[in-house]
Image 1 (cartoon, rainbow, N blue to C red):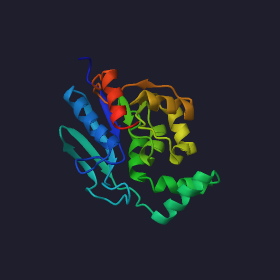
Image 2 (image 1 turned 60 degrees about the vertical axis):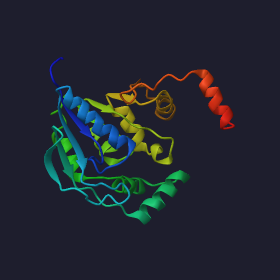
Image 3 (image 1 turned 120 degrees about the vertical axis):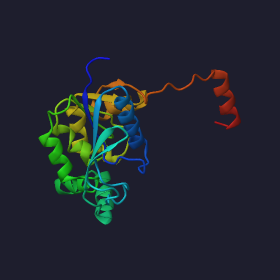
Image 4 (image 1 turned 90 degrees about the vertical axis):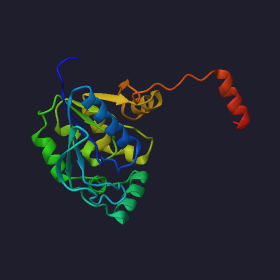
Length: 218
């Protein structure tokens, strides 16, 4: 193996009690990179629940599964404000103040952002996953040499101006699927590598697909 790298992984929520495709992806990435001999630390919030963003784990740094996890308290979500601003975003008439409020309700942690700001050049690479939340849209532009794993969806929150800027600011973008890459190019004009999720889907004979479509009346 080449020289081990210092890799920071930024994920809005992280841990064995956190469920979600991007969050599980982040945990598996941290595990695999550690197994490969790289020095990995995860920067995240104390929240377990992406609905409330209330602390579910203690703040601070600790060793977990062979790598360091640094947790910072996020701002709690104001549900009524969040719902109102999401609806306003869908109309295309949202103000700059309301966009800032959306960031606050999407896991913003001033202490986490301060950490990234002061450690911007202390890692060989910073990996941000997924695109949606404040630790990525506010944090990625603060660091040097960044990789964005967006886990992108075609949704109104993807059309925030900060999201477009973070796709532009990332040193590299790694998409999970070809369809996601096509969406990223369509929304932001950003090409990237399709790296998948670390496994190859088994090949399925076309005859089997035809049978499934017939049985399901598709």
